[in-house]
Image 1: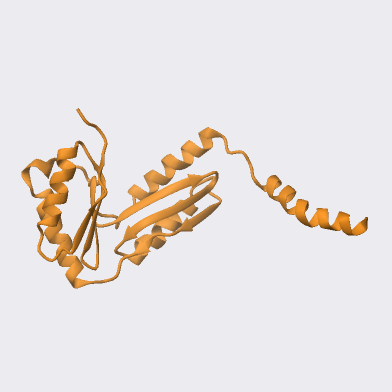
Image 2 (image 1 turned 90 degrees about the vertical axis):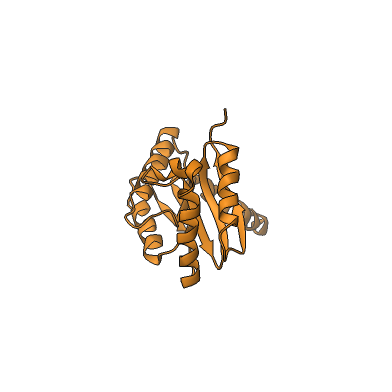
Length: 178
Protein backbone atom coordinates (compact mmCIF):
# COMPACT_ATOMS: atom_id res chain seq x y z
CA UNK A 1 0.00 0.00 0.00
CA UNK A 2 2.78 2.40 0.94
CA UNK A 3 4.66 1.74 -2.35
CA UNK A 4 1.49 2.53 -4.34
CA UNK A 5 1.15 5.84 -2.50
CA UNK A 6 4.78 6.70 -3.21
CA UNK A 7 4.35 5.76 -6.86
CA UNK A 8 1.27 7.98 -7.15
CA UNK A 9 3.08 10.83 -5.40
CA UNK A 10 6.00 10.58 -7.84
CA UNK A 11 3.71 10.79 -10.88
CA UNK A 12 1.07 13.23 -9.65
CA UNK A 13 3.04 15.64 -7.48
CA UNK A 14 5.03 17.18 -10.38
CA UNK A 15 1.87 17.74 -12.41
CA UNK A 16 0.12 19.35 -9.43
CA UNK A 17 3.10 21.62 -8.77
CA UNK A 18 3.39 22.57 -12.45
CA UNK A 19 -0.28 23.42 -12.52
CA UNK A 20 0.23 25.80 -9.61
CA UNK A 21 3.08 27.59 -11.42
CA UNK A 22 1.07 28.22 -14.57
CA UNK A 23 -0.88 31.43 -14.17
CA UNK A 24 -3.56 32.72 -16.43
CA UNK A 25 -2.38 35.86 -18.16
CA UNK A 26 -5.04 38.52 -18.66
CA UNK A 27 -5.36 39.50 -22.34
CA UNK A 28 -4.67 43.14 -21.48
CA UNK A 29 -1.34 42.21 -19.87
CA UNK A 30 -0.31 40.15 -22.87
CA UNK A 31 -1.26 42.93 -25.30
CA UNK A 32 0.65 45.49 -23.24
CA UNK A 33 3.76 43.29 -23.19
CA UNK A 34 3.58 42.75 -26.97
CA UNK A 35 3.19 46.48 -27.58
CA UNK A 36 6.04 47.40 -25.21
CA UNK A 37 8.41 44.73 -26.60
CA UNK A 38 7.77 45.96 -30.15
CA UNK A 39 8.38 49.57 -29.07
CA UNK A 40 11.58 48.78 -27.18
CA UNK A 41 13.03 46.73 -30.06
CA UNK A 42 12.29 49.43 -32.64
CA UNK A 43 14.00 52.00 -30.40
CA UNK A 44 17.31 50.09 -30.28
CA UNK A 45 19.97 52.54 -31.52
CA UNK A 46 21.96 50.12 -33.69
CA UNK A 47 19.01 48.34 -35.34
CA UNK A 48 19.04 48.91 -39.10
CA UNK A 49 17.82 47.52 -42.39
CA UNK A 50 20.38 44.69 -42.26
CA UNK A 51 19.01 43.27 -38.98
CA UNK A 52 15.81 41.36 -38.39
CA UNK A 53 14.48 40.83 -34.88
CA UNK A 54 11.26 38.95 -34.27
CA UNK A 55 9.64 37.96 -31.00
CA UNK A 56 6.85 35.90 -29.52
CA UNK A 57 5.11 36.36 -26.20
CA UNK A 58 3.73 33.42 -24.23
CA UNK A 59 2.28 34.53 -20.95
CA UNK A 60 4.97 36.55 -19.22
CA UNK A 61 7.77 34.95 -21.26
CA UNK A 62 9.32 36.50 -24.37
CA UNK A 63 11.32 34.66 -27.03
CA UNK A 64 13.56 36.75 -29.29
CA UNK A 65 14.47 35.40 -32.74
CA UNK A 66 16.05 36.63 -35.95
CA UNK A 67 19.48 37.68 -37.16
CA UNK A 68 21.65 40.69 -36.38
CA UNK A 69 25.09 41.82 -37.56
CA UNK A 70 26.27 43.18 -34.23
CA UNK A 71 26.60 41.01 -31.08
CA UNK A 72 25.93 44.11 -28.98
CA UNK A 73 22.51 44.44 -30.62
CA UNK A 74 21.61 40.90 -29.53
CA UNK A 75 22.62 41.68 -25.96
CA UNK A 76 20.85 45.07 -25.98
CA UNK A 77 17.64 43.48 -27.29
CA UNK A 78 17.66 40.94 -24.48
CA UNK A 79 18.37 43.59 -21.85
CA UNK A 80 15.63 46.02 -22.91
CA UNK A 81 13.05 43.24 -23.05
CA UNK A 82 14.09 41.96 -19.59
CA UNK A 83 13.50 45.44 -18.20
CA UNK A 84 9.86 45.57 -19.34
CA UNK A 85 7.41 45.39 -16.46
CA UNK A 86 5.69 42.01 -16.35
CA UNK A 87 8.29 40.11 -18.39
CA UNK A 88 9.56 37.23 -16.27
CA UNK A 89 11.79 35.34 -18.70
CA UNK A 90 13.59 36.19 -21.95
CA UNK A 91 14.84 33.44 -24.26
CA UNK A 92 17.28 35.24 -26.57
CA UNK A 93 17.65 33.06 -29.69
CA UNK A 94 18.86 35.88 -31.95
CA UNK A 95 21.61 34.70 -34.30
CA UNK A 96 24.66 36.92 -34.71
CA UNK A 97 25.69 36.86 -38.38
CA UNK A 98 29.35 36.10 -39.13
CA UNK A 99 31.69 38.98 -39.95
CA UNK A 100 32.41 39.13 -43.67
CA UNK A 101 33.68 41.90 -45.90
CA UNK A 102 32.06 40.16 -48.86
CA UNK A 103 28.67 40.15 -47.10
CA UNK A 104 29.07 43.82 -46.15
CA UNK A 105 29.67 44.70 -49.81
CA UNK A 106 26.62 42.66 -50.81
CA UNK A 107 24.49 44.46 -48.23
CA UNK A 108 25.31 47.85 -49.73
CA UNK A 109 24.72 46.68 -53.31
CA UNK A 110 21.44 45.04 -52.29
CA UNK A 111 20.30 48.18 -50.49
CA UNK A 112 20.97 50.28 -53.59
CA UNK A 113 19.34 47.72 -55.90
CA UNK A 114 16.15 47.52 -53.84
CA UNK A 115 15.69 50.94 -52.24
CA UNK A 116 17.22 52.84 -55.18
CA UNK A 117 14.81 51.29 -57.71
CA UNK A 118 12.04 53.76 -58.66
CA UNK A 119 8.96 51.64 -57.92
CA UNK A 120 10.43 50.52 -54.57
CA UNK A 121 11.71 53.92 -53.40
CA UNK A 122 8.53 54.46 -51.39
CA UNK A 123 9.80 51.84 -48.94
CA UNK A 124 12.96 53.92 -48.28
CA UNK A 125 10.94 56.76 -46.74
CA UNK A 126 10.25 55.45 -43.20
CA UNK A 127 13.01 55.50 -40.60
CA UNK A 128 12.38 51.81 -39.92
CA UNK A 129 12.64 50.25 -43.37
CA UNK A 130 9.91 47.69 -44.08
CA UNK A 131 12.15 45.50 -46.26
CA UNK A 132 14.92 43.89 -44.21
CA UNK A 133 18.00 42.61 -46.06
CA UNK A 134 19.71 39.71 -44.27
CA UNK A 135 22.97 38.42 -45.77
CA UNK A 136 24.79 35.35 -44.47
CA UNK A 137 27.68 33.93 -46.48
CA UNK A 138 26.27 35.23 -49.76
CA UNK A 139 22.79 33.85 -49.00
CA UNK A 140 20.19 36.63 -49.00
CA UNK A 141 16.89 36.63 -47.14
CA UNK A 142 14.34 39.41 -47.60
CA UNK A 143 12.10 39.86 -44.56
CA UNK A 144 9.41 42.40 -43.81
CA UNK A 145 6.32 43.77 -45.48
CA UNK A 146 5.31 45.26 -48.82
CA UNK A 147 2.04 46.62 -50.17
CA UNK A 148 1.43 44.15 -53.01
CA UNK A 149 2.69 41.05 -54.80
CA UNK A 150 4.26 43.09 -57.59
CA UNK A 151 6.50 44.90 -55.07
CA UNK A 152 7.41 41.57 -53.46
CA UNK A 153 8.37 40.10 -56.82
CA UNK A 154 10.32 43.23 -57.83
CA UNK A 155 12.33 43.19 -54.60
CA UNK A 156 13.17 39.52 -55.15
CA UNK A 157 14.20 40.13 -58.78
CA UNK A 158 16.32 43.13 -57.82
CA UNK A 159 18.09 41.10 -55.12
CA UNK A 160 18.68 38.19 -57.52
CA UNK A 161 20.26 40.62 -60.00
CA UNK A 162 23.05 41.69 -57.63
CA UNK A 163 26.38 40.09 -58.49
CA UNK A 164 27.86 37.89 -55.78
CA UNK A 165 24.51 36.72 -54.43
CA UNK A 166 24.32 32.92 -54.22
CA UNK A 167 20.60 32.64 -53.48
CA UNK A 168 17.63 34.75 -52.42
CA UNK A 169 14.81 33.70 -50.10
CA UNK A 170 11.96 36.15 -50.50
CA UNK A 171 10.00 36.02 -47.23
CA UNK A 172 8.31 39.39 -47.72
CA UNK A 173 4.69 39.50 -46.60
CA UNK A 174 2.02 41.37 -48.55
CA UNK A 175 0.02 43.46 -46.07
CA UNK A 176 -2.57 45.05 -48.31
CA UNK A 177 -3.72 44.05 -51.74
CA UNK A 178 -6.18 46.00 -53.91
